[in-house]
Amino acid sequence: MSTRWRPGALAVWVIPLVVGFIQVMGSTGADANMRYQARHLDALAYALLVAGPVALLARRRLPVAALAVVFAVTDCYILLGHVLGPVFLSMVVAIVAAIGAGRRVAAWIVTGTGFAVLNGVGALTPFGPFRLRAWPATHALVMLIWLLLVLTGAELVRIRSERAAEARRTRAEEERRRASEERLRIARELHDVLAHNISMINVQAGVALHLMDERPEQARTALAAIKEASKEALTEVRSVLGVLRQVDEDAPRTPTAGLGRLDDLVSRARAAGITVRTRVTGRPYPLPAGIDLAAFRILQEGLTNVTRHAGPGVTATVRVAYGAGELLLEVEDDGRGAPGDLPGGGDGIPGMRERVTALGGEMTAGPRPGAVGFRVRATLPMPVDGTPVGTGARDDARTPDDQHAGTPALDKEHD
Image (cartoon, rainbow, N blue to C red; front, side):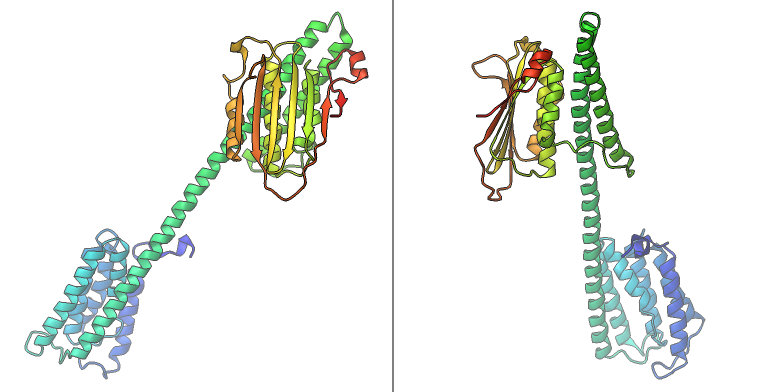
C-alpha cells in the first residue's frame, strides 16, 4: 500500500468524518424499516451517532480514552432501544486505533468492561431507565463473538503494521549502509587513481627538470609520460565524479581498469625510471569485475609505493598467479631507502587491505624476509569453476631497443 494512502498518513479528521456520515445515513435508512426496533431516531439518537465519530478525533493522542468514550456512547445508543444500523463502526475504528498504538492490554480491558456494562444494564431492562425491550443471551453471545473477531483483526493489523515498519527501517538502514560503502569505494578509487598518477607525474617532472638542458630528448620523453598520466587521471576522476553526480555519461574512452591493462601499468612505472619485471603464472581466466578491478588497483598501489619510497635505480617484480580457487598478487622491490621511507604511513596500504578484506582475501605488507626492500602480497579467493590451470610463465626485463634508448623497460623471458 502506498504510504500516502495508509490510514495513519491521512488527516486525523478524515476517518471520523467518513464514519460519522456512514453511521448517520445508515441509521437513518434503517429507521425507515421498523422490523428491528420500535423506537424512531430522535435528537438524542443523532447526537449519540455523531458523538462516537467526534471522540475518534482523539484516537491518536488518547487512544484508550477515545475507546472508552466510544463504548459509552454506543452502549447508551443500544440501551435506548434505537435501530442498530452501522452504529458499531466507531467502535471498530477505536479498537483498531488503540491496539495499533500499542495499548493492547488497556484496549482489551476497556472492551471487556464495555461489553459487561452493556450486558449488565441490558439484563435490568425493562426495569431500568432505558427502553431496550429485551437483551437475550443470544444477543450477548453474538456481540461477544463479534468483539473477539474485531480484537483479533486489530491484532493482525498491528502485527502487519509493525512488520511493515520494520521492513521500512531495514530498507533505510540498508540504503545508508550501501551509501556508506559507496562513499568508501569512491574514496579508495580516487586515492588509487590520484596517488598513482600524481606520483608518476612528480617523478617525471623531476626527471624533465634535471635533463632539460643536458639531454632534451629524454626530457621530452618524461614530458610525454606526464601528459599521458595526467590525461588518464582526468579520465578516471571524471568517471568517478560522474557516479557522485548521478548523471549519464558517455562510455569511457579507455578500457576498464583490470589485469588486462597490466602492460600499460608496468610501462608507466618503467617510464618513471623503475626497472620492472613481471611474472604471470597459471593460465589466465576471466575474473569477476570486482576482483579484476581490485587486483589492478592493488598492483597499481604497490608500484606507486615503489615509485615514491624505494629510491633511485630500484628493480621491482610484479607477480600474478592464476590458481584454482585463488588469485595471487605480489609486488616487491630491492629498494634501499631508509626504514622511515617505507610505505605504510599513508592511506595506500590500508586501502589495499580494505579491498582485499572486502573480497574475503588476505594481505601482508612489510620488508622482504632476509633481504632489503619491501613486499606487498595479496591473495584473493576465486570461484572454482573447474577450469584447468596451466604452468606457463612469463618474465619481463629489457628489450635491446630499450637498452639502446637508455630507459628501463620490459624484457620478455619465458620460464
